Image (cartoon, rainbow, N blue to C red; front, side, top):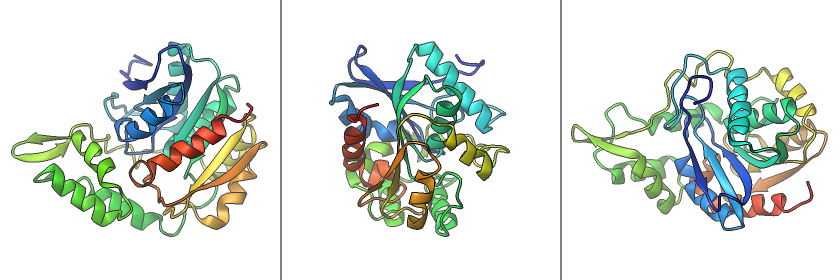
Length: 270
């Protein structure tokens, strides 16, 4: 329990190994990133995946502001006694990781942020991307898990079938149809204060003192290629990378590539 909310997290690897925290994107939860976590744990890490408030099996809330989510991370760090650890954060999780690194410089040793155009305007493709993402949660569910896999491959052609099949186990049968067991709170996406205003997040990035890797996916629907260097330059100590063969849905499209980039970056000096 953190701030009267019940939080759920998953852990891979030896409990005594060097921790690595992975933070998911908005409307997602820990389980779709299992392949990435498992592979990273094989490098000798304890990989911890947290369901953020309103997502997965963590409780819903009336407050989804960035301040509340950042405070969740501080409490989570303290509850687990994590100290300074490496963090990999995707999309929405990247903003919260940056807030934590700025507020608690002792909490993050190295930070990899994936496909979040922090402090700049999202790509012109963003509305079409979110419309496609919304199609993956039809109100009447799916006739089968296979129907979800087919729909996801139609909407996101780079998605790997094995990754989608694994994600499909989040669907449970109810009244003859398959529905998401842990659908995010519908209030999350439009919640007031969910994202810090652009100038504020740019200032937050300037206060992050740990080494940062800013990763843009090659086919990102949210992060324009021309903005990568701009976002890198918001941080005092950062480099830019491109994740090949992937759009924003990294856990479906190129999980192995995420592991390769993260392994290389996290083996660098802190």
